[in-house]
Image (cartoon, rainbow, N blue to C red):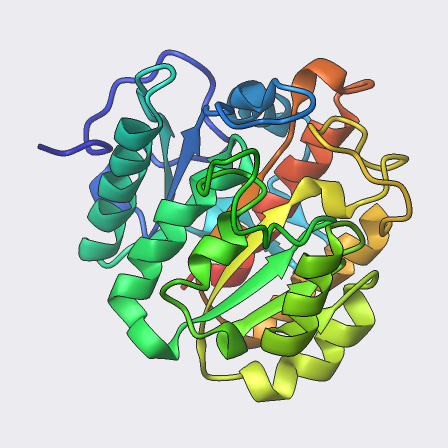
Length: 290
């Protein structure tokens, strides 16, 4: 049974969405889940708000001289998730992602908390296997073995990715928070670039060219001055300008999947975090469009 095809959605679509799943090369869907959030809940509202404010930005990108009018993508709406059932929710996210990949389309997923990325990344890995590179852009390492006794959490998501992806194929940028154990694990096992994103990413571009890459982006990599609406804000982050410039570097890479997580609209001042997220999604869709 299809999860995304012919799905009826009553809320706003991301601007410029095609009317039919079959007509699109890129499939966007939302995952309104924040069951393991440990500080400020509310990211389940992120996908809907990001769609809502997307009408406030242009379909055309000055940065790329391209427009959403020139590409074909479909917004499949939010997944229908059983509240509180983590196992079932992760299974449904896996099914939706697999459906997109099996149809030779590219998934762009909006969270929700960061745990929603785990089944997305797992399905992308299942397609590309050992060739897959994971780029993780975040304020937090997310490398705990468990958090308060739970090994599947927004705080453990990248550690769980290490269970099936060779850690040497994982690149972390912008990290500035975590335990000493996470810090030591990252330095020893991963390609670890704390505090900054743009300059270290520039230095990695040549070695990443030609590899299939999934990008997972936690909005809290930005300083709270630029993105205050998130569950675990962390001072000392990057600017919105640096984030956009970093996203544009992916133009030369083979991006095969993307997720953006942790926008929590209840804390948003003038929708500025959601507007930034919508702009980043627009740029990524233009980057991966055929």
